[in-house]
Length: 477
Image 1 (cartoon, rainbow, N blue to C red):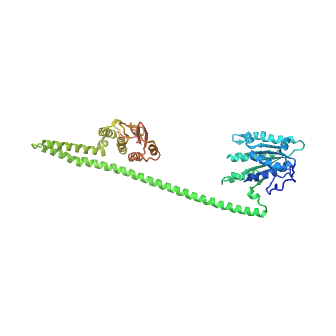
Image 2 (cartoon, one colour; image 1 turned 180 degrees about the vertical axis):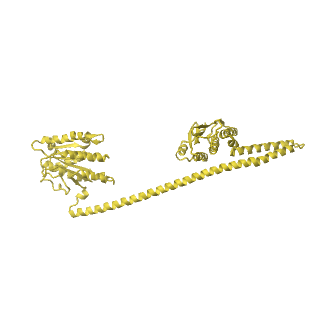
Image 3 (tube, one colour; image 1 turned 30 degrees about the vertical axis):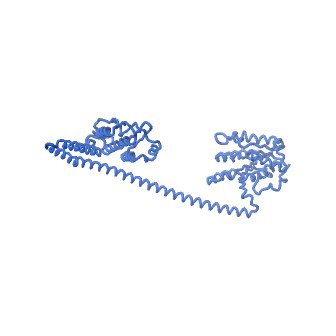
Protein backbone atom coordinates (compact mmCIF):
# COMPACT_ATOMS: atom_id res chain seq x y z
CA UNK A 1 0.00 0.00 0.00
CA UNK A 2 1.28 3.50 -0.84
CA UNK A 3 1.45 6.28 1.74
CA UNK A 4 1.86 10.01 1.55
CA UNK A 5 5.62 9.49 1.91
CA UNK A 6 5.96 6.84 -0.81
CA UNK A 7 4.36 8.62 -3.80
CA UNK A 8 6.25 8.33 -7.08
CA UNK A 9 8.71 11.11 -7.88
CA UNK A 10 6.46 12.43 -10.65
CA UNK A 11 3.41 12.70 -8.40
CA UNK A 12 4.05 16.03 -6.61
CA UNK A 13 2.87 19.28 -8.17
CA UNK A 14 3.41 22.89 -7.29
CA UNK A 15 -0.36 23.34 -7.53
CA UNK A 16 -2.19 23.55 -4.19
CA UNK A 17 -3.62 20.26 -2.94
CA UNK A 18 -5.72 19.13 0.00
CA UNK A 19 -3.56 18.83 3.13
CA UNK A 20 -4.18 15.56 4.92
CA UNK A 21 -2.07 16.52 7.95
CA UNK A 22 -4.61 19.17 8.90
CA UNK A 23 -7.92 17.63 10.01
CA UNK A 24 -9.32 20.73 11.72
CA UNK A 25 -10.99 22.18 8.64
CA UNK A 26 -12.52 21.06 5.36
CA UNK A 27 -11.08 21.97 1.98
CA UNK A 28 -12.90 22.50 -1.28
CA UNK A 29 -10.46 22.70 -4.21
CA UNK A 30 -11.32 23.47 -7.83
CA UNK A 31 -8.97 22.55 -10.67
CA UNK A 32 -9.04 24.00 -14.17
CA UNK A 33 -7.32 21.88 -16.80
CA UNK A 34 -6.60 21.82 -20.49
CA UNK A 35 -5.49 18.20 -20.92
CA UNK A 36 -6.97 15.14 -19.20
CA UNK A 37 -3.46 14.01 -18.24
CA UNK A 38 -3.01 17.06 -16.00
CA UNK A 39 -6.33 16.43 -14.28
CA UNK A 40 -5.58 12.73 -13.73
CA UNK A 41 -2.10 13.49 -12.36
CA UNK A 42 -3.52 15.86 -9.73
CA UNK A 43 -6.45 13.56 -9.02
CA UNK A 44 -4.17 10.54 -8.60
CA UNK A 45 -2.07 12.46 -6.10
CA UNK A 46 -5.17 13.58 -4.21
CA UNK A 47 -6.96 10.20 -4.05
CA UNK A 48 -3.75 8.14 -3.76
CA UNK A 49 -2.51 10.22 -0.80
CA UNK A 50 -5.86 9.84 0.97
CA UNK A 51 -6.05 6.10 0.49
CA UNK A 52 -2.37 5.73 1.37
CA UNK A 53 -3.05 7.56 4.66
CA UNK A 54 -5.83 5.09 5.50
CA UNK A 55 -8.65 7.47 4.65
CA UNK A 56 -11.66 6.78 2.41
CA UNK A 57 -12.44 8.17 -1.03
CA UNK A 58 -15.54 8.74 -3.17
CA UNK A 59 -14.98 9.48 -6.86
CA UNK A 60 -17.96 10.74 -8.93
CA UNK A 61 -16.49 11.01 -12.41
CA UNK A 62 -17.02 10.22 -16.07
CA UNK A 63 -16.12 6.69 -17.11
CA UNK A 64 -13.07 7.92 -19.01
CA UNK A 65 -11.65 9.77 -16.01
CA UNK A 66 -12.62 7.03 -13.56
CA UNK A 67 -10.82 4.40 -15.65
CA UNK A 68 -7.77 6.64 -16.10
CA UNK A 69 -7.58 7.26 -12.36
CA UNK A 70 -7.79 3.53 -11.60
CA UNK A 71 -4.93 2.76 -14.02
CA UNK A 72 -2.70 5.39 -12.41
CA UNK A 73 -3.46 4.20 -8.88
CA UNK A 74 -2.72 0.62 -9.86
CA UNK A 75 0.55 1.73 -11.50
CA UNK A 76 1.53 3.25 -8.15
CA UNK A 77 0.94 -0.06 -6.39
CA UNK A 78 -2.56 0.53 -5.02
CA UNK A 79 -4.95 -2.43 -5.26
CA UNK A 80 -8.15 -0.58 -6.24
CA UNK A 81 -10.27 -3.74 -6.28
CA UNK A 82 -9.25 -4.47 -2.68
CA UNK A 83 -10.00 -0.93 -1.49
CA UNK A 84 -13.38 -1.10 -3.25
CA UNK A 85 -14.11 -4.41 -1.53
CA UNK A 86 -13.10 -2.84 1.81
CA UNK A 87 -15.59 -0.05 1.20
CA UNK A 88 -12.86 2.61 1.35
CA UNK A 89 -12.99 3.52 -2.36
CA UNK A 90 -16.37 4.17 -4.02
CA UNK A 91 -16.29 5.06 -7.75
CA UNK A 92 -19.63 6.39 -9.11
CA UNK A 93 -20.71 7.47 -12.58
CA UNK A 94 -21.14 11.26 -12.71
CA UNK A 95 -24.00 11.38 -15.24
CA UNK A 96 -25.99 8.65 -13.47
CA UNK A 97 -25.52 10.23 -10.05
CA UNK A 98 -26.42 13.68 -11.38
CA UNK A 99 -29.69 12.39 -12.82
CA UNK A 100 -30.69 11.19 -9.34
CA UNK A 101 -30.29 14.58 -7.63
CA UNK A 102 -31.83 16.91 -10.26
CA UNK A 103 -35.35 18.31 -9.91
CA UNK A 104 -36.86 20.84 -12.35
CA UNK A 105 -33.47 21.53 -13.93
CA UNK A 106 -31.61 22.24 -10.67
CA UNK A 107 -29.91 20.16 -7.95
CA UNK A 108 -32.40 19.44 -5.18
CA UNK A 109 -31.05 19.69 -1.59
CA UNK A 110 -33.09 16.76 -0.30
CA UNK A 111 -32.12 14.50 -3.19
CA UNK A 112 -28.48 15.55 -2.83
CA UNK A 113 -28.51 14.70 0.87
CA UNK A 114 -30.17 11.35 0.21
CA UNK A 115 -27.99 10.24 -2.72
CA UNK A 116 -24.55 11.86 -2.32
CA UNK A 117 -24.76 12.37 1.44
CA UNK A 118 -25.98 8.80 1.86
CA UNK A 119 -22.94 7.42 -0.02
CA UNK A 120 -20.46 9.47 2.01
CA UNK A 121 -22.09 8.56 5.32
CA UNK A 122 -22.16 4.91 4.33
CA UNK A 123 -18.48 4.77 3.35
CA UNK A 124 -17.56 6.54 6.58
CA UNK A 125 -19.54 4.07 8.67
CA UNK A 126 -17.94 1.08 6.90
CA UNK A 127 -14.46 1.97 8.17
CA UNK A 128 -15.31 1.54 11.88
CA UNK A 129 -13.30 3.08 14.73
CA UNK A 130 -12.43 6.79 14.62
CA UNK A 131 -14.24 8.92 12.08
CA UNK A 132 -12.33 9.17 8.82
CA UNK A 133 -12.14 12.17 6.60
CA UNK A 134 -13.55 11.51 3.14
CA UNK A 135 -11.61 12.51 0.03
CA UNK A 136 -14.25 13.21 -2.61
CA UNK A 137 -13.87 14.07 -6.27
CA UNK A 138 -16.97 15.40 -8.02
CA UNK A 139 -17.34 16.00 -11.77
CA UNK A 140 -21.11 16.59 -11.85
CA UNK A 141 -20.60 20.36 -11.82
CA UNK A 142 -18.58 20.12 -15.04
CA UNK A 143 -21.40 18.16 -16.68
CA UNK A 144 -23.92 20.84 -15.70
CA UNK A 145 -21.66 23.55 -17.07
CA UNK A 146 -21.17 21.67 -20.35
CA UNK A 147 -24.96 21.33 -20.60
CA UNK A 148 -25.32 25.11 -20.48
CA UNK A 149 -26.53 25.27 -16.86
CA UNK A 150 -23.95 27.43 -15.03
CA UNK A 151 -26.36 28.50 -12.28
CA UNK A 152 -27.18 24.86 -11.56
CA UNK A 153 -23.44 24.09 -11.36
CA UNK A 154 -22.89 26.91 -8.85
CA UNK A 155 -25.90 25.70 -6.84
CA UNK A 156 -24.37 22.22 -6.67
CA UNK A 157 -21.08 23.74 -5.43
CA UNK A 158 -23.09 25.42 -2.65
CA UNK A 159 -24.69 22.11 -1.66
CA UNK A 160 -21.23 20.51 -1.39
CA UNK A 161 -20.09 23.39 0.86
CA UNK A 162 -23.16 23.08 3.08
CA UNK A 163 -22.58 19.34 3.41
CA UNK A 164 -18.89 19.88 4.23
CA UNK A 165 -19.79 22.10 7.19
CA UNK A 166 -21.20 19.11 9.08
CA UNK A 167 -19.09 16.22 7.72
CA UNK A 168 -15.31 15.55 7.60
CA UNK A 169 -14.91 16.10 3.89
CA UNK A 170 -12.17 17.27 1.54
CA UNK A 171 -13.55 17.87 -1.93
CA UNK A 172 -11.80 18.19 -5.27
CA UNK A 173 -13.74 19.22 -8.40
CA UNK A 174 -12.61 20.14 -11.88
CA UNK A 175 -13.65 22.08 -15.00
CA UNK A 176 -12.05 21.94 -18.46
CA UNK A 177 -10.74 25.35 -19.53
CA UNK A 178 -12.35 24.83 -22.93
CA UNK A 179 -15.69 25.56 -21.22
CA UNK A 180 -14.66 29.20 -20.56
CA UNK A 181 -13.98 30.56 -24.03
CA UNK A 182 -16.44 33.46 -24.10
CA UNK A 183 -16.05 36.89 -22.57
CA UNK A 184 -19.20 36.55 -20.48
CA UNK A 185 -17.79 33.41 -18.85
CA UNK A 186 -15.36 35.55 -16.83
CA UNK A 187 -17.88 36.60 -14.19
CA UNK A 188 -19.21 33.05 -13.89
CA UNK A 189 -15.67 31.70 -13.42
CA UNK A 190 -15.16 34.14 -10.54
CA UNK A 191 -18.41 32.91 -8.99
CA UNK A 192 -17.14 29.34 -9.20
CA UNK A 193 -13.80 30.29 -7.63
CA UNK A 194 -15.68 32.05 -4.81
CA UNK A 195 -17.26 28.72 -3.84
CA UNK A 196 -13.84 27.11 -3.21
CA UNK A 197 -11.12 27.41 -0.61
CA UNK A 198 -8.34 26.84 -3.16
CA UNK A 199 -7.92 27.09 -6.93
CA UNK A 200 -5.57 25.05 -9.12
CA UNK A 201 -4.97 26.98 -12.37
CA UNK A 202 -4.41 25.27 -15.70
CA UNK A 203 -1.22 23.42 -16.50
CA UNK A 204 0.14 26.31 -18.57
CA UNK A 205 0.76 28.03 -15.22
CA UNK A 206 1.36 25.18 -12.77
CA UNK A 207 3.96 23.57 -15.05
CA UNK A 208 6.30 26.51 -14.46
CA UNK A 209 9.10 25.37 -12.16
CA UNK A 210 10.30 28.59 -10.53
CA UNK A 211 8.68 31.54 -8.81
CA UNK A 212 10.44 33.87 -11.24
CA UNK A 213 8.87 32.12 -14.22
CA UNK A 214 5.45 32.30 -12.62
CA UNK A 215 5.82 36.02 -11.92
CA UNK A 216 6.90 36.64 -15.49
CA UNK A 217 3.91 34.65 -16.71
CA UNK A 218 1.57 36.64 -14.48
CA UNK A 219 2.99 39.87 -15.88
CA UNK A 220 2.50 38.54 -19.42
CA UNK A 221 -1.08 37.51 -18.65
CA UNK A 222 -1.76 40.95 -17.17
CA UNK A 223 -0.46 42.53 -20.37
CA UNK A 224 -2.71 40.26 -22.44
CA UNK A 225 -5.68 41.10 -20.22
CA UNK A 226 -4.98 44.82 -20.61
CA UNK A 227 -4.64 44.44 -24.36
CA UNK A 228 -7.88 42.45 -24.46
CA UNK A 229 -9.70 45.12 -22.44
CA UNK A 230 -8.39 47.77 -24.83
CA UNK A 231 -9.45 45.70 -27.83
CA UNK A 232 -12.90 45.14 -26.32
CA UNK A 233 -13.26 48.88 -25.63
CA UNK A 234 -12.18 49.73 -29.18
CA UNK A 235 -14.55 47.14 -30.58
CA UNK A 236 -17.36 48.56 -28.47
CA UNK A 237 -16.63 52.04 -29.79
CA UNK A 238 -16.51 50.72 -33.35
CA UNK A 239 -19.81 48.89 -32.87
CA UNK A 240 -21.38 52.03 -31.40
CA UNK A 241 -20.10 54.06 -34.35
CA UNK A 242 -21.46 51.43 -36.71
CA UNK A 243 -24.84 51.52 -34.95
CA UNK A 244 -24.93 55.31 -35.25
CA UNK A 245 -23.99 55.09 -38.92
CA UNK A 246 -26.66 52.47 -39.48
CA UNK A 247 -29.23 54.61 -37.69
CA UNK A 248 -28.23 57.62 -39.79
CA UNK A 249 -28.44 55.51 -42.96
CA UNK A 250 -31.87 54.19 -41.98
CA UNK A 251 -33.02 57.74 -41.26
CA UNK A 252 -31.70 58.87 -44.64
CA UNK A 253 -33.44 55.97 -46.37
CA UNK A 254 -36.69 56.84 -44.59
CA UNK A 255 -36.34 60.47 -45.64
CA UNK A 256 -35.62 59.50 -49.24
CA UNK A 257 -38.51 57.03 -49.21
CA UNK A 258 -40.86 59.69 -47.85
CA UNK A 259 -39.62 62.12 -50.50
CA UNK A 260 -40.18 59.54 -53.24
CA UNK A 261 -43.67 58.86 -51.96
CA UNK A 262 -44.43 62.56 -51.91
CA UNK A 263 -43.08 62.83 -55.44
CA UNK A 264 -45.15 59.84 -56.55
CA UNK A 265 -48.23 61.33 -54.94
CA UNK A 266 -47.52 64.65 -56.61
CA UNK A 267 -47.07 62.96 -60.00
CA UNK A 268 -50.37 61.12 -59.63
CA UNK A 269 -52.08 64.36 -58.71
CA UNK A 270 -50.54 66.15 -61.67
CA UNK A 271 -51.49 63.26 -63.91
CA UNK A 272 -55.12 63.46 -62.79
CA UNK A 273 -55.17 67.22 -63.26
CA UNK A 274 -53.69 66.90 -66.75
CA UNK A 275 -56.20 64.21 -67.66
CA UNK A 276 -59.02 66.48 -66.52
CA UNK A 277 -57.63 69.37 -68.54
CA UNK A 278 -57.20 67.23 -71.68
CA UNK A 279 -60.70 65.82 -71.27
CA UNK A 280 -62.10 69.34 -71.01
CA UNK A 281 -60.13 70.47 -74.05
CA UNK A 282 -61.31 67.48 -76.10
CA UNK A 283 -64.89 68.13 -75.15
CA UNK A 284 -64.89 71.92 -75.41
CA UNK A 285 -62.68 72.45 -78.46
CA UNK A 286 -62.16 69.44 -80.70
CA UNK A 287 -65.58 68.04 -79.86
CA UNK A 288 -67.25 71.35 -80.74
CA UNK A 289 -65.30 71.56 -84.00
CA UNK A 290 -66.46 68.08 -84.99
CA UNK A 291 -70.07 69.01 -84.20
CA UNK A 292 -69.77 72.15 -86.32
CA UNK A 293 -68.23 70.07 -89.10
CA UNK A 294 -71.16 67.67 -88.90
CA UNK A 295 -73.60 70.56 -89.33
CA UNK A 296 -71.69 71.72 -92.39
CA UNK A 297 -71.77 68.22 -93.83
CA UNK A 298 -75.55 68.11 -93.29
CA UNK A 299 -75.87 71.29 -95.32
CA UNK A 300 -73.55 70.10 -98.05
CA UNK A 301 -75.32 66.75 -98.24
CA UNK A 302 -78.27 68.50 -99.79
CA UNK A 303 -76.12 69.14 -102.88
CA UNK A 304 -77.47 66.87 -105.71
CA UNK A 305 -75.38 63.83 -106.73
CA UNK A 306 -73.22 63.68 -103.58
CA UNK A 307 -75.49 61.72 -101.25
CA UNK A 308 -73.23 58.61 -100.94
CA UNK A 309 -70.06 60.65 -100.24
CA UNK A 310 -71.87 62.74 -97.67
CA UNK A 311 -73.23 59.63 -95.98
CA UNK A 312 -69.70 58.23 -95.66
CA UNK A 313 -68.39 61.53 -94.34
CA UNK A 314 -71.22 61.76 -91.83
CA UNK A 315 -70.50 58.22 -90.58
CA UNK A 316 -66.81 59.04 -90.12
CA UNK A 317 -67.65 62.21 -88.21
CA UNK A 318 -70.06 60.34 -85.96
CA UNK A 319 -67.28 57.89 -85.13
CA UNK A 320 -64.87 60.75 -84.44
CA UNK A 321 -67.36 62.40 -82.11
CA UNK A 322 -68.00 59.11 -80.28
CA UNK A 323 -64.28 58.38 -79.94
CA UNK A 324 -63.53 61.88 -78.65
CA UNK A 325 -66.41 61.66 -76.21
CA UNK A 326 -65.25 58.23 -74.99
CA UNK A 327 -61.64 59.39 -74.69
CA UNK A 328 -62.74 62.47 -72.79
CA UNK A 329 -64.87 60.43 -70.41
CA UNK A 330 -62.08 57.91 -69.84
CA UNK A 331 -59.67 60.67 -68.94
CA UNK A 332 -62.15 62.18 -66.50
CA UNK A 333 -65.83 61.17 -66.46
CA UNK A 334 -68.01 64.28 -66.01
CA UNK A 335 -70.71 62.21 -64.31
CA UNK A 336 -68.39 61.68 -61.35
CA UNK A 337 -68.15 65.40 -60.72
CA UNK A 338 -71.94 65.62 -60.93
CA UNK A 339 -73.28 62.55 -59.13
CA UNK A 340 -70.29 60.59 -57.79
CA UNK A 341 -68.28 57.40 -58.13
CA UNK A 342 -71.24 54.99 -58.40
CA UNK A 343 -72.59 56.63 -61.56
CA UNK A 344 -69.13 56.96 -63.12
CA UNK A 345 -68.37 53.31 -62.30
CA UNK A 346 -71.61 52.12 -63.92
CA UNK A 347 -70.86 54.05 -67.10
CA UNK A 348 -67.25 52.82 -67.21
CA UNK A 349 -68.08 49.15 -66.46
CA UNK A 350 -70.76 49.10 -69.14
CA UNK A 351 -68.48 50.60 -71.76
CA UNK A 352 -65.48 48.46 -70.80
CA UNK A 353 -67.58 45.31 -71.04
CA UNK A 354 -68.65 46.24 -74.58
CA UNK A 355 -65.10 47.08 -75.68
CA UNK A 356 -63.38 44.07 -74.05
CA UNK A 357 -66.02 41.33 -74.35
CA UNK A 358 -65.75 40.58 -70.61
CA UNK A 359 -68.92 39.73 -68.66
CA UNK A 360 -68.90 42.34 -65.91
CA UNK A 361 -71.24 42.85 -62.96
CA UNK A 362 -71.27 45.87 -60.67
CA UNK A 363 -72.68 46.10 -57.17
CA UNK A 364 -72.60 49.76 -56.05
CA UNK A 365 -74.76 51.81 -53.68
CA UNK A 366 -77.62 53.87 -55.11
CA UNK A 367 -77.79 56.41 -52.29
CA UNK A 368 -76.71 59.99 -53.08
CA UNK A 369 -74.06 60.21 -50.34
CA UNK A 370 -70.90 61.68 -51.82
CA UNK A 371 -67.34 60.85 -50.82
CA UNK A 372 -64.43 63.31 -50.85
CA UNK A 373 -63.35 64.18 -54.41
CA UNK A 374 -59.85 62.69 -53.92
CA UNK A 375 -61.33 59.41 -52.67
CA UNK A 376 -63.80 59.11 -55.56
CA UNK A 377 -61.10 59.88 -58.09
CA UNK A 378 -58.74 57.31 -56.53
CA UNK A 379 -61.46 54.64 -56.60
CA UNK A 380 -62.19 55.35 -60.26
CA UNK A 381 -58.49 55.16 -61.23
CA UNK A 382 -58.12 51.90 -59.29
CA UNK A 383 -61.18 50.51 -61.09
CA UNK A 384 -59.61 51.45 -64.44
CA UNK A 385 -56.26 49.84 -63.57
CA UNK A 386 -57.88 46.70 -62.16
CA UNK A 387 -60.12 46.05 -65.17
CA UNK A 388 -57.24 46.78 -67.55
CA UNK A 389 -55.13 44.15 -65.74
CA UNK A 390 -58.00 41.67 -65.91
CA UNK A 391 -58.36 42.20 -69.66
CA UNK A 392 -54.63 42.14 -70.48
CA UNK A 393 -53.14 39.55 -68.11
CA UNK A 394 -55.66 37.28 -66.39
CA UNK A 395 -57.21 35.37 -69.28
CA UNK A 396 -60.56 35.78 -67.49
CA UNK A 397 -63.97 35.73 -69.13
CA UNK A 398 -65.83 37.54 -66.35
CA UNK A 399 -65.27 39.80 -63.37
CA UNK A 400 -67.37 41.09 -60.48
CA UNK A 401 -66.99 44.62 -59.11
CA UNK A 402 -68.13 45.65 -55.63
CA UNK A 403 -68.23 49.17 -54.20
CA UNK A 404 -69.33 49.18 -50.59
CA UNK A 405 -69.43 51.77 -47.84
CA UNK A 406 -69.34 50.88 -44.17
CA UNK A 407 -68.64 52.79 -40.99
CA UNK A 408 -65.56 54.89 -41.58
CA UNK A 409 -64.37 53.34 -44.86
CA UNK A 410 -65.18 52.57 -48.48
CA UNK A 411 -64.13 49.35 -50.24
CA UNK A 412 -63.64 48.61 -53.94
CA UNK A 413 -63.11 44.97 -54.94
CA UNK A 414 -62.51 43.53 -58.41
CA UNK A 415 -62.60 39.74 -58.62
CA UNK A 416 -62.03 37.79 -61.84
CA UNK A 417 -62.18 34.11 -62.86
CA UNK A 418 -58.78 34.06 -64.59
CA UNK A 419 -55.74 31.83 -64.21
CA UNK A 420 -54.36 33.70 -61.20
CA UNK A 421 -50.87 34.89 -60.35
CA UNK A 422 -47.70 32.96 -59.59
CA UNK A 423 -47.21 32.38 -55.87
CA UNK A 424 -43.69 33.85 -55.91
CA UNK A 425 -44.98 37.07 -57.46
CA UNK A 426 -47.82 37.23 -54.95
CA UNK A 427 -45.45 36.70 -52.01
CA UNK A 428 -43.07 39.35 -53.30
CA UNK A 429 -45.89 41.88 -53.55
CA UNK A 430 -47.08 41.11 -50.01
CA UNK A 431 -43.56 41.44 -48.61
CA UNK A 432 -42.25 44.45 -50.54
CA UNK A 433 -45.19 45.86 -52.48
CA UNK A 434 -43.17 45.50 -55.68
CA UNK A 435 -42.56 43.10 -58.53
CA UNK A 436 -46.11 42.97 -60.00
CA UNK A 437 -46.12 45.74 -62.57
CA UNK A 438 -46.91 49.43 -62.71
CA UNK A 439 -50.68 49.00 -62.44
CA UNK A 440 -50.76 47.38 -59.02
CA UNK A 441 -48.03 49.68 -57.72
CA UNK A 442 -50.09 52.67 -58.86
CA UNK A 443 -53.15 51.27 -57.05
CA UNK A 444 -51.10 50.73 -53.90
CA UNK A 445 -49.70 54.27 -54.03
CA UNK A 446 -53.17 55.79 -54.46
CA UNK A 447 -54.49 53.81 -51.49
CA UNK A 448 -51.46 54.71 -49.33
CA UNK A 449 -51.80 58.40 -50.21
CA UNK A 450 -55.29 58.40 -48.68
CA UNK A 451 -54.37 56.23 -45.69
CA UNK A 452 -55.85 53.09 -47.22
CA UNK A 453 -54.66 49.56 -47.91
CA UNK A 454 -54.59 47.15 -50.82
CA UNK A 455 -55.23 43.44 -50.36
CA UNK A 456 -54.34 40.95 -53.08
CA UNK A 457 -55.51 37.32 -53.22
CA UNK A 458 -54.89 34.91 -56.09
CA UNK A 459 -55.29 31.23 -56.92
CA UNK A 460 -55.79 29.02 -59.94
CA UNK A 461 -59.46 30.06 -59.98
CA UNK A 462 -58.90 33.80 -60.19
CA UNK A 463 -57.57 36.97 -58.58
CA UNK A 464 -59.14 39.44 -56.17
CA UNK A 465 -57.93 43.02 -55.67
CA UNK A 466 -59.50 44.88 -52.76
CA UNK A 467 -58.82 48.53 -51.88
CA UNK A 468 -60.01 49.95 -48.56
CA UNK A 469 -59.86 53.73 -47.95
CA UNK A 470 -60.97 55.49 -44.75
CA UNK A 471 -63.61 58.22 -45.16
CA UNK A 472 -64.84 60.87 -42.74
CA UNK A 473 -68.04 59.98 -40.89
CA UNK A 474 -69.79 63.18 -41.94
CA UNK A 475 -69.97 62.66 -45.72
CA UNK A 476 -72.91 64.82 -46.81
CA UNK A 477 -75.62 63.93 -49.32
